[in-house]
Length: 143
Image (cartoon, rainbow, N blue to C red):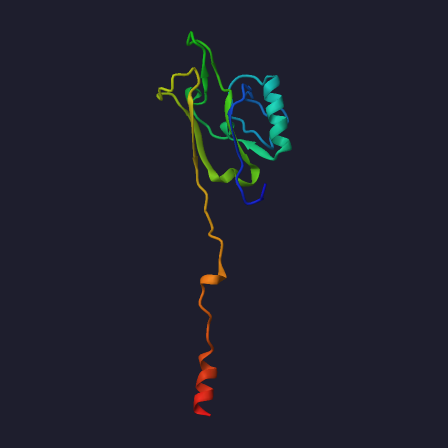
């Protein structure tokens, strides 16, 4: 994959990352919920290998905006859906949170993120007209 491309890895990975870093501070933040499980360790290991930053734990929100799954009885909540982004582009991510009011007919909450990225157009010299040295033209006409 080219270095200039942004890699986003998102989905329901059923990984609980918890609220402690547990030595994984390179790729996760501190704003989590609960305790880390086995899938959480696997997901963090994958993100470390691929140089990805797990974005759901980077932003401080109330717990109700962190939960991405609610049990059918409505008593249990977890944070198990995430978005991971290249570490190089982690500052392009402005916010990520769960949108609780969206009716998506699922026990998962809708995960909404805000990205900002400056797109630079590839400079193409074909469309630039050639520059003429006018002084040379004046010297030839006067001499």
